[in-house]
Image (cartoon, rainbow, N blue to C red; front, side):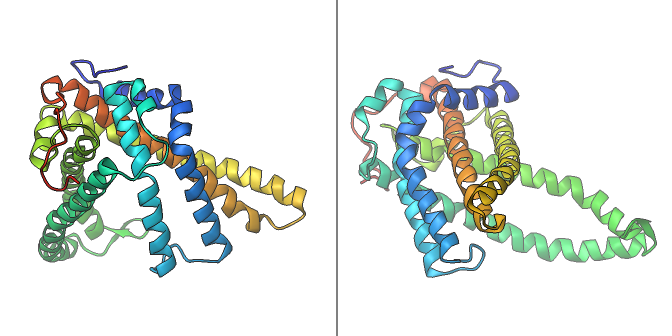
Length: 296
């Protein structure tokens, strides 16, 4: 599949994006293999040295920064393969940290800052408004148990705020997905900017977000299956090595998760590349790299 069909089916597009990656798994392994190996070694080192993955530390920050940097090149390359064709693979180095990679990194930082700037005020304002309203609703509903430990007051709060919370979360996801098109634009020979990212996704935003959700759910499902397979494999390795499964299982688990996360990264990049290609009027590459910030 090279472009999205006019109707842009949510399920079909998500499946096409994942199938695109599967059909080109040699390319995915070629460009993602080294970053995958480095990421797994870093994860194994964290496990070996008992570095906590839940508490902030210099080691955790360093490893996270390294993983961000090493996945810049495969991300850029995959966007270019999806949009410009597989011949682009011959023009891209396996390992790189050049102009395009730095450009993508800077736009990713700006995207993170923008999303935090939008979400933080909404979170605090919503907290100040929702907590008093929820308290009133809980009081009106009463403390009588309805199901298990859920009271009538809890049920009233859930009934009032549940749909609204889901709706707001979906709208925020839609906005984040539209702004995330900036990564695709920054990876290509085309002007990049949040305004342009918003314009490119106009008319397909909800369907694009729906396809993105399907891919995310697929990643979660595959990780759950990988957890089961990792447990079985860990038990077999533990028996073969005559050691405790608790010592081997974490290493098998992070390996499986790393492979699935890489496939998920390429699948989501493929989806954004499909959307970009569908908007043929926005897809004409610039003759020279745009001079706008943050282009290096």
